[in-house]
Image (cartoon, rainbow, N blue to C red):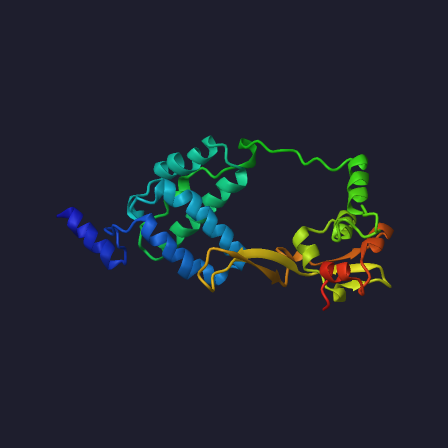
Length: 252
């Protein structure tokens, strides 16, 4: 009788603690209806990939009311670490599941978020590869390769100058591909980086292929910046009347 009264009280408070809906059933609905409207296309693609690759395969058959801290810790987080996945992959899975379960808690679908006691992954527990910059010799080889010519004096790699421009400005590839002539001020010797070209899923046609999309603001506010061009960078900016130049920098 005591358990029945407790159950009635929980239902009166809005909890649906008897639901048998599984992670497999509810997480895609949360992803599509709650998260998608709040995220940029590339961010949504990454979140969807994280969820599809890691969370349902490990926990999908569990009812959301049956998920326990120990289950999540052992079958998802610890398993991913044991499989030598990167810190970034494990953290993304942790954050995605935590966000989902926080939502269910707020909706009173579950009584509490079991992620609260799951050990959050920290970088110290993961091996990290050192970033090794190009040596002076490698830089020279790269520049020479970008400027290779045929006997006709035509460039072997018409886009080679773009790589020299990237080398001397530190731009990301997507930032370089999104450049327009309006972003360049040769008199001041500056370049304005304010866009990013990204590859996202083509969801309009329902096909599993990808499309290129210009993202008008970079990932972080610090990504919007003015870069001063050194002489090597200036020489790599193509003249507007060159065919190759039109492919490197858009007309806008």
